[in-house]
Length: 334
Length: 244
Image (cartoon, rainbow over all chains, first blue to last red):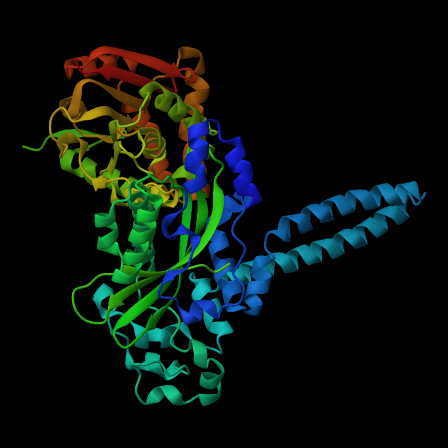
């Protein structure tokens, strides 16, 4: 809020000051429509990226999801930024030790012997660190899914085939063997899935949550990002026709109400950067619900500084029929 | 009878050049920006900034970025043209276009993106305020035809900007040759694991018409007030022309 006030004060013209006071991104930073239980039960989300961390967005994505899963990997992953600190610290320490030793009057052979031992120790640490880093990188590309699986009682990603969404080019094409590894007992999987009841019970709340391995997350997320940006623009213009196209009736009603409350004033939302990750897909009796977490930077006034945002959009798509993905709910996670 | 053209120093059939160029860019797409930075020591950014400044895109402009590749120009144009503007990112190479599209999207820019051939632009006459082509003309088989197409889609008063490698000034010739035929392929091999593509790059730059020849070609295509700016001693040159 403080930041917001500062922004307002810094605004150059009186007119833009007035506009600022009303500027709100789509949904007005409130939770709207359908909420995902699975998202709610995630441990505290990763903090919104600060401007300095923006450049690391692709890396950012993994820690955020992993942190959500609360796995051990998450803790390690979130520590990643400190790596350079460690290395730099090491270098400084080396220099400092040399200075200290010479200051203490330990010179010549003894000092060099001590330095060598210390350097070797440091080197060993560095190598261990690098090896660990590479091991982490070796894990599957979508570390977020793997991480989520690990956190939720051994839910294996390929086991999630049961919640595949045939309409989006994924289908149930897996070989039967894929189900052997299923200890989560996913909806469509009959029979083989219940071998590991203990694990299933442990992860009961999240059984159906994950991303099917053959789901085309990449293009799904691309479309999600595009529709995020497009809907922000439609929201700014108050273009209810465009909003209706991409929202469920409940969300549309809420958005329309908010636009009316605004009283015909155009809003300003400039998406400066955007990153999205698919947290998981749930299946209900009638539809799929995919939870997508967006984070990035948004500008709410023409020359205002960009501010970080994190928001989960729940997109739904009927199990059958022609309907595409629409925005069924906005969920605030912080 | 098959027409022939040059692919680097090799002479190939025309339809083969298209495929060869496509192969080069499929191969380098992922590492394209890293390599650009490395090879030009970051200078390509300065050249592009100069081009963007010369374009002078204003809100509401319709801009066509041909061979837009990874979207550097389109990104800047899209911000300048604003929400009332229209910036098309086009390329003939799908791999490059994918990279560009995703990059723009991650910057919150949803622009129309299209796979198309600059020699047969799928746009009506007199449509764009600006047409730009950065480091793309060199790879086109029929440059005259491409330039004529660019002129066709420009509005009267619209401006064409061609940023391309060019002929360096005499004192720089020797070190530049050494650099592009020894260092470049080596860098390409080390960084992108692909020396051939970068050898093609160096060769294709040599085969590209020099400043005055290109100026003449633009005039032949019907552009007026054609002028060029040498950048970094002629390593690259920006040609601009106006359709009247």
